[in-house]
Image (cartoon, rainbow, N blue to C red):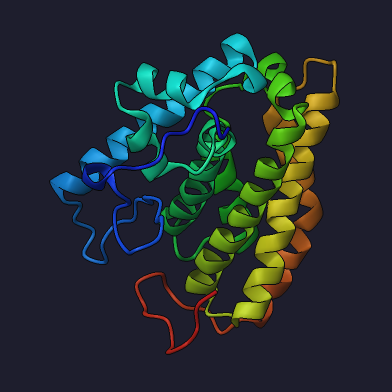
Length: 239
């Protein structure tokens, strides 16, 4: 991508720090989001949408940073504030899914079984519309994209683990193990769905895969002290 990415000038430098720091959008503990944060979020989503759309139209290997920026109505320098590569931008939606999974889990009733809550959270995010299998196959088959897919799976693991610790009060190691099991199950379900030439929807593969790891969630809940989502974590207890 070296030919497509222009160096940043003084007026469009990284958001903070002396070295490049890419923008990530996080809510404040109060739950309030400032106008500036909303603007950043909108810019990031516009870039991600443009990157995905271009990848499906011309193939991920033919997408240039300049084209993504132009489609989103921003400069290439602005693109570099949000993403480090075209591959990261194309896969940005997958990264958002990880945070949506965790948010959906936090909204589930406190007395709901952990395995049922995790299944409901995943289906809430991935079961709304059936993905375009042909387009995803094209993108997933591109070698440069495979590393991004794996990186986002790891992000899902950490994000789910933190939400599991908050929900159950378990230790971080246990939360990481169960979160990792569910992240792996989600990735495996997606891979088998992509390989399948039948008509089964992604949700059926997800249900089957998550059913395989549900015993881990049930065992965790049986041994964890339990805690409602509103109760703060103990000091140092964070994935």
